[in-house]
Length: 133
Image (tube, rainbow, N blue to C red; front, side):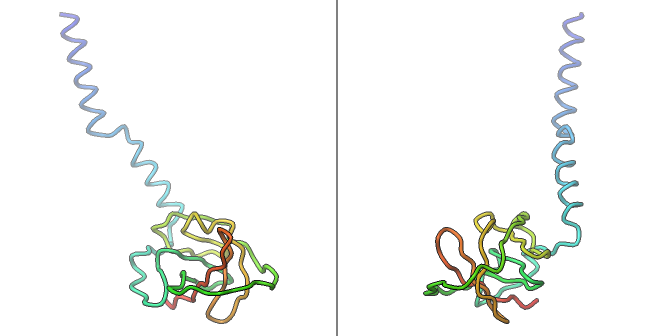
């Protein structure tokens, strides 16, 4: 009889944990959502023909996307900043020096103009273009 009760209790516990998922996933998602309250989702940006909306950077209050072109840049200018904050890739960066792409973390910023910046990462210079929201 004791074995039967123990087995029944174990089955009930397993069923309970499988239904609730122990609550770990919900807590993790909840804390992430709270941390990124006020961030726009990348899916809400809309299509941009001249740049990627998945590879984004915020610098000096301007949102930039990786340009859909290849550049030939020799460098020679001084570094003006570093991208040093990483957020999940489903969000649009909103703070300066923030990116949603792990490869851009610690990228160096060069040659800022009104509509472009150049980032150096993975030993390459890459053009980023202003995204108008």
